Image (cartoon, rainbow, N blue to C red; front, side, top):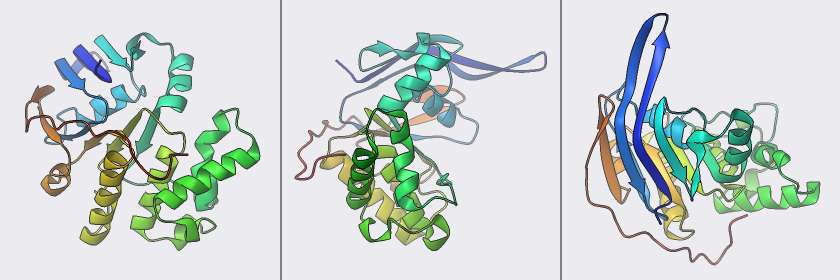
Length: 240
């Protein structure tokens, strides 16, 4: 069974009395363990699609099923609970809380779980170790470089061992060297841990890291390269 199935999805926004169509009859299948890149011009619907997959928004019509559950039918409180267990989101601008340390930022999603304080700390430390920031866990965002801040953002995204990692322009605010380091990290999460990743990007070099690239044009998907065979998890170090 595919991990994600999007069927005949339309998304229309209203601006006063005007309807603005963003996605039009979109169909998409994502296999478990796949690394998928979404490309397209600004306004093509890439971020809207990512938000729908994350349960941050709901389609106007059509269905979205993730791991056998039709999330497009869930109520807002059900979606919030579902997101906390199944989605790790990586933002372009990191979205770290400046008054919290790296460790505390990574621990935040775990506050919604039944884990005890010691267990939350252990999970957050493991996530920071995976992204190579074990020596920076007590630093504040202002004490980190942009690339390091994004690593904290990725650690926060993986700390709950999510079903899906969704990345919205994760290298868009980084220099070339830091961008390559972040892409190497996403490669590792895919290859070693078997994580399913959907990445929105304008950068062809970033998209080339994915096993499949799809292009959005005016709310419709155009096929890119054929899908790569999903990679099974096999890391020596377990996800938190």
